[in-house]
Image (cartoon, rainbow, N blue to C red; front, side, top):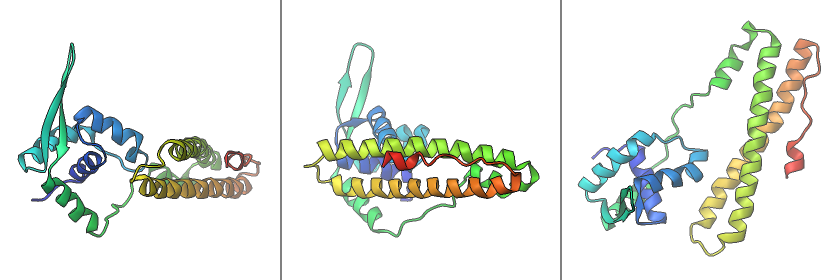
Length: 196
């Protein structure tokens, strides 16, 4: 049966920690793969139902409280097998939809200051992202030493750090290039280097 990739995100999350509700899975996605994988949260609950119908996950004890009842789920053996089968397939990276790059590509139609402003905003976002990833790296090194998933998480994180540092270096170079076209100095101080 054909599955969307939301199914594999759910199977993967439940492989790390069983007995998660749809809400728990959404929060786990936000704090982990959400840094590099945009998930459609509206798909989580319908996908949980489909995976249950397919026998890949099973409901486990619901969480009950004064105002809520949240169903938790765990992987079945078939769910583990399905996840392993998907992990062995060649990966597919869909063409990205990056509005920043789209605007930069057509940037000649606006004054250089417009693209310079966009690059400066991107630099700020990347500096914030780098600081967040460095905090995550420090936290994972302190508390996750015995977790068998840690080497894979750290490899993912280290690539994110390397790509963000490269983007910050590119941003400094891009600001210098566009400053020459604009005739003003718009370069940013290399604040990222102080985060390392």
